[in-house]
Amino acid sequence: MGVSKKRVIALIPTKNEEESIKKVITQVKPWVDKILIVDGYSKDKTVKIAKNEGVEILFQEGKGKGMGFQTFLKKYPIKKDEFYVMLDGDASYPAKDIPIFLENLKEYEIVSGKRKGVRFKLKNIVHFIGNKIISLLGFLLYGKYIDICTGMWGFRGDVLKSMKISAKGFELEADLFMNMRRLNLKSKEILIDYFPRIGEEKLKESDGFRIIYFLIRKKFIN
Ligand SMILES: Nc1nc2c(ncn2[C@@H]2O[C@H](COP(=O)(O)OP(=O)(O)OP(=O)(O)O)[C@@H](O)[C@H]2O)c(=O)[nH]1
Ligand SMILES: [Mg+2]
Image (cartoon, rainbow, N blue to C red; front, side, top):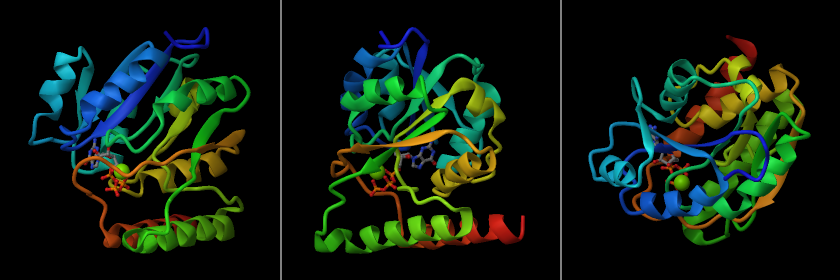
């Protein structure tokens, strides 16, 4: 059951997360009324495992995490007074913090997780610097500094209904941030743990450049 009186729905985007999805579902379940998985054509057992856990699956149109979110906005009957929490299906985000997100959604229209412990391991240096550059660019172009590339967000239903998302892939979070600014939403960042993902990485360095280009293009071109 959700901690708030509002109905709470967890949204989990997945693509080939068979190694982690059961763990994520188990961690999320106690805090929400419903779990909805938006799947991007997983070729492994992700969908089967999720179905066995009694979770609803929405099969996305097109390719990429952003297209998954767009399908959700188009197909899912979002209600204005519901609360939504989105987190990745790779077990890198702390489901135990969902109640904090819900508590803040009573006051704020959009809530996002600021990741601590994006560690300075050699493997992660490119990620770390890339994340900082993207956040800095977000500040320079849109006037607010947040951890843009975070995969944990909370939204009120009415806010989701007013969002316009054009991102197809991993620019999704940048698009959420831009919607936050464009709609002048009352927002809050919450400090969260960030764990090493279970399973295979899907984000590539080229995605970082795509996100940067997206932030610039949307500001100056369309
Ligand atoms: N619906 C949908 N989800 C996707 C797609 N691609 C990735 N995802 C999911 O989006 C979430 C974030 O993707 P990740 O691969 O973890 O990307 P990341 O967290 O930026 O980077 P790493 O964890 O380092 O790989 C995960 O839950 C993925 O399963 C897609 O095409 N469609
Ligand atoms: Mg991840």
